[in-house]
Length: 330
Image (cartoon, rainbow, N blue to C red; front, side, top):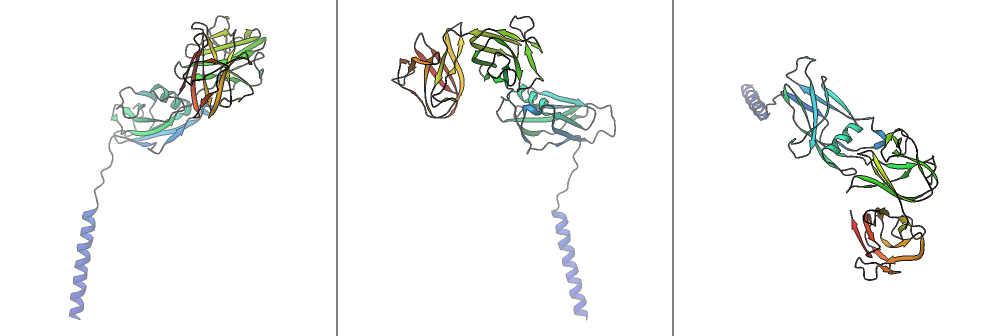
């Protein structure tokens, strides 16, 4: 019986030592102090949808151990390009709450303001600031949307039913289209919706929200929209040069017109191409066409088809006086 009692005491002692060791192995947790940004987390990754700009993208949520219920404390949520240490932050909003709902539109504007290009995934650092200090940094990923501007009206191919898309030039920040217009009118419209549209009240190449229809006579035109400065140009095309071929969106059936620059008397375009071939053609007719016999960026009358080996977005220029061209993958 004594032996059993001794064995019980030994086992109890071992259990006590074991429990003591377990307690010592537990790392002491120190509660976060100050402003602690809780949401969003680093898993947040959103492709921003231009048709949902007024919807909430996410709620920024934080705690502040120094705020014991003082509703007068103001918090500002800031965004900066990832890894820049907030050298040039932009404000997403200010509130006296411990959260801020941010719309897709606000997040899109901020992402572009800090230098993230449309349709390109970028890293954004987020923090919260107040008189109590600055929070930890949350890092998220967003892809800004590309506004889709087009023309609509009786002068266009789709009439007043649908917009004809313009092409965005990331090098100039402008939109352009070269197209045949009927005698009639047109306006500029965003994302194929009447929510945002522009016309020209004074017929002076400046744009006004909801402004007057722009009248044109029948012909080929290059139209350039500078939405940042609310202006546009419309240039008649006397010689309608385009490209045609299996590499182009319309194949060998139809030309895609190049934009005409009346100042330099040259042509250019941004276009999505697929592997295949193309040629330059005048006025939708094979009577005058150019290819490249030496594949050396010089144009030859009725020359060889120009090969495109890799699909993608290309910037093409052409000088039909100097008989040269360039093709650059963007």
